Length: 141
Image (cartoon, rainbow, N blue to C red; front, side):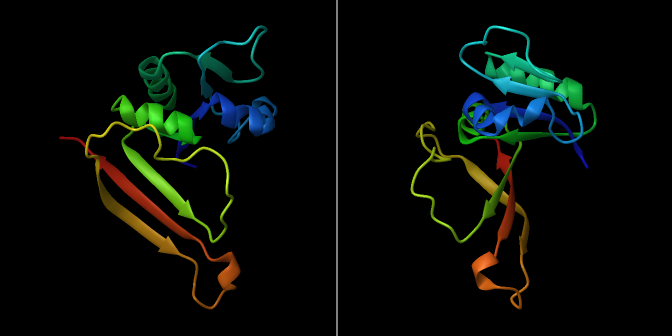
């Protein structure tokens, strides 16, 4: 796997059961949070309150590898701070009706994306399980 570090929003991290302190075979996990909880974090988890510091620490930990981001809140914060290089969306034919919207709370600025890759499940598979994977480069002015 190309992922060598992970940034997660606190809400996503908590909802995922804290991944029992491990995610992606022991890569460092940086949890972007407004408040650091009491007690030591499990496994390779580090709590970070500043979005730029979080991105910097994750990139340093990843070296030449990728940093994966989980959670709409973390993605929004990184995008607002200019710290998100690519955006990968997985479109599944299910409407959840609740949860955090990925593109809420972004500035009114125009953010341009360039499509890098589009993969879809074969048409012969069950349409109810169809999935489209889209990867975009975040274009900077």
